[in-house]
Length: 479
Image (cartoon, rainbow, N blue to C red; front, top):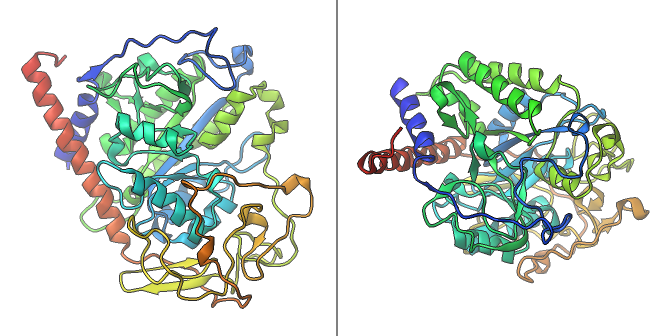
């Protein structure tokens, strides 16, 4: 087991041994907010540093299913931000092994759903990226324009991938790691990539106006070794908790760049052959309690951070910022939208359909598919036609899929989604009836497969890391 931890450490170290630092240069006179942001350690807005909020971004990767949600909820619990709203997080969601009904619930709770491809390939192409959006819209009801972020599986980003994301209208990528020496606030790629990155990737010639890179801020551990995802796997949880506290303090005592904690929930699910995740969860919770108890610390989504950057206000005014409100629709009658609309303590009771396929089962509010969504067919033909797909003029929170009606009654919830994927719409598969399906709380089958997907990811990182160290040793760059 210690050898596994050693290999994981080697991977993270190696990601810093072979970087090319691009000749990054950004002209502040030509790069003006809110459409352009130079890479900078300084927060935007010229707000006195003691009045700048400290943002905490807690992210999760891979499938959303019953086991992963149990692990996630063990961390976020009933935690709230200083404005009284529940903390929010960003989930980079792959569609394989995902329970689409749970994605609806996650979005309805105020969290962000971001793109992590369909099948978690090593080098994602356009069909994997667009297929994710299409499937999450068709079977979870997530509006296209709300799926604005992306993280590459295994963090294997490329120039072509960044260009594809910008072409498809994504707002940001979060696949590039940042060291303590380049802890920039999120920045647009108008003038290229500023952070350290792999040879041939970090190139000032990659210029994507208005497209954000939201760096993944590494955790600095003992002996100046850096760690990116799942830091508790890198050592004794009690020791790693101290690393997290130290790194968080460094952020909050300097220029307050967002602090990130990046996790795979599958690593926090008990599984044969792996250490008990209980100590990890305990020490993550200890750290979260410490960080979120500090003044003006807000645990929010990536999109909320970017909204603040475009319209920065002092922490004392954040409660009035449009992006940080937490209003919940008061509908009075239960519809299938991931909320307890009639205040009886239950969510979508009797409204979700249960989809039982040969190799997976999941729930949905929007008609079960005849096959598992895949890159070749992200929106398979529906088994039934008794539900209506979310309208482009309504958010899923107000959409009744059983009768096909938007319950938004005033401008406060008005909505127009013009962000279709390559002009593709799945409305042709929308239902035409109004009868409800059988109610069920969906559970994706094969939860171990999602965990195995993470295992493959970890092993791939280790392999890449070992190769990196070997090359570095040959080049004489290991320090």
